[in-house]
Amino acid sequence: ERIRNVRPDALCVCWGHVVDCNLHFNVTTPGEFEEDEELTAILEPYLFESVVRRKGSISAEHGLGRCKNEYLGELAKNEAALAKMRMIKGMFDPRGILNPDKVFPAC
Image: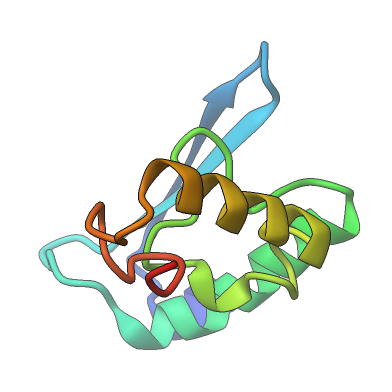
């Protein structure tokens, strides 16, 4: 319903991996190939909060990347997990040259 109010022509496609319980939610907008920022602004908070409320994770095998890192510490990963991630990143990339500033600032 939220999608239809903004883009009545949008198509929702959900698929996933049964073994590891991952669900991928995709919305396509026929004839347009760029992100619809209005639609994203409506969907992301709704979907992410819904997933977390059900004890799920908004990141899986693809990680957080640049698109979801604003949710670190809030909806994705707790501070203890983030501290471990930073420690591991620092061990393998002490100079911060691998994917600089993608998720964490240079260590």
